[in-house]
Image (tube, rainbow, N blue to C red; front, side, top):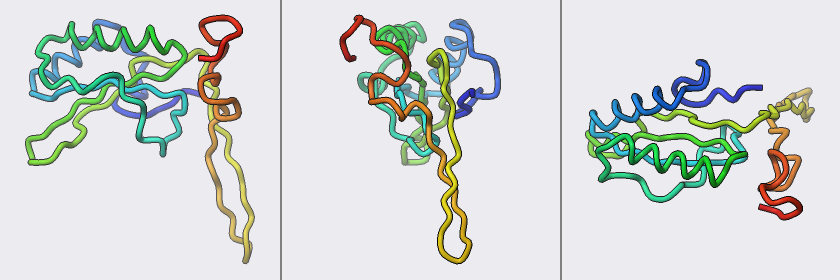
Length: 148
């Protein structure tokens, strides 16, 4: 199951050149970027782990791509996304956010049904990845036999 969060999520994965072009667009608009990663992409999990600090002072897409590639190398089995922030309205808002890396394979979600009083039925979405402990959700660790 393919996670569809953020801009471009219904398109095929972006190439490095397409990611660089989007970074250039963000920088041309004056939007600083940040890199985030997670192994739990539940739609309500909006707070992913930050990779470094937001890049307020970078003006070259190559510098942002270095950080993206460093995060990808450090977390090869996690989702990685880029966020662009716009502070023109006096508050910081997300102007653009898109996934730049996905684990292979993406395990998907299950729908759990709960029956309550008065025939009330509620549903919960749970990621199959969360059946395993954090850090082991997408395959073996990079060093055989050692947890991440």
